[in-house]
Length: 337
Image (cartoon, rainbow, N blue to C red):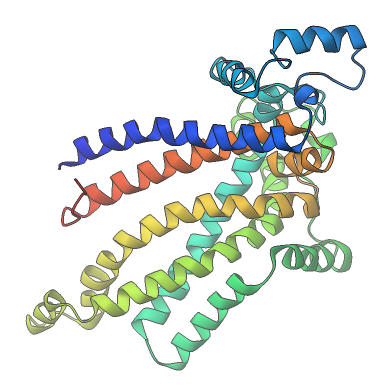
């Protein structure tokens, strides 16, 4: 099977998978309690509530409710977010940029850490450099993110007073437009170095927490790939041709070890989103994680369902992209029939 056919088959599977996730999500929210809060606010009158019940068929059997709920989802109606005081889709759009900007900077930090530690550990395997590198990687995997976030807040904000919490200095950003919602990009578009520096300064600590946590998996995978590639025949052949050890490592060992590692890095971006909720709460980051955490504690099922559907969609899409890229990067990969 070639890459094109493989991609088409994965896209076909994409739809029933999303459908199954939506069914499970819908069923869990119905078990948890009345769904009326998904569509009305606390200020709605009894008459308005009855109208909503009729509009969304909430008096009908649950499978009928699911049909109309899914119909609404496909047309962009995810219900009403009582936590945000606006439709769920609008709440997602408002907060998505903040979370994705944090996640992107986090994965950049994760890659910088893991490529450095993984390369050192693999090249100098079974030496003190390897042991130290792996120890640092395990530290990132085993450290609870809420504890790391609280520790950095105490050191950077309370003790040293160098790093702020939140997303930006409000006064500075009042005169800057937000066409993309990514503060770093918006600052560049506005030509404001001060605003760009402020955005980066607010990103450093929360991105470091989630980036260091995810770097552990990538580091260990890269290290194992490098150790494995060092034993390959083509590496011995390169050495026999008289190539310098540094050239052999860079051109033949590390380059080939990075191909499967990129797959792990792509999947790590997905798992990185799991730490966003805790980090956003600790640092007061106004993104999706903080919003859905508040929604969950207040029984705002519509917001929780919207968040789950969004993350499921992103997860499946990134999985598809990563697998397809892997097949293109390494023609030796055999695609399942």
